[in-house]
Length: 123
Image (cartoon, rainbow, N blue to C red; front, side, top):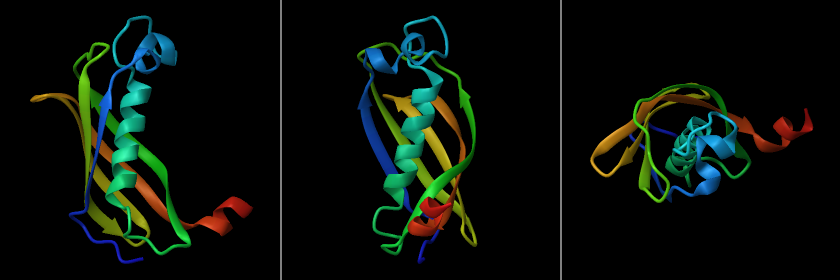
């Protein structure tokens, strides 16, 4: 593993019907659901690590702290961004953010652990 802080990943997404809180089971309003916000932030953290891990390695999510502070309507274009800010052995910490244009919709921290893919799946 040769992972260093500063790695960044970005995911662009158009909010569709399946992304809404009402469809995700996390509320009864037609706005971007928090579960999808988390998934987009996780995808951005995975993107940040593209090419940085050994072929036998992967990462798994272990913890997330997120403030989802702004509603996002269907059809909106959002961007999830992750930046690796801490490496502690096999534990990786990212600062994550989801934006709609210049507005921050969510912000937080996300942790992943580097694992050997085959050993992890064998458990």
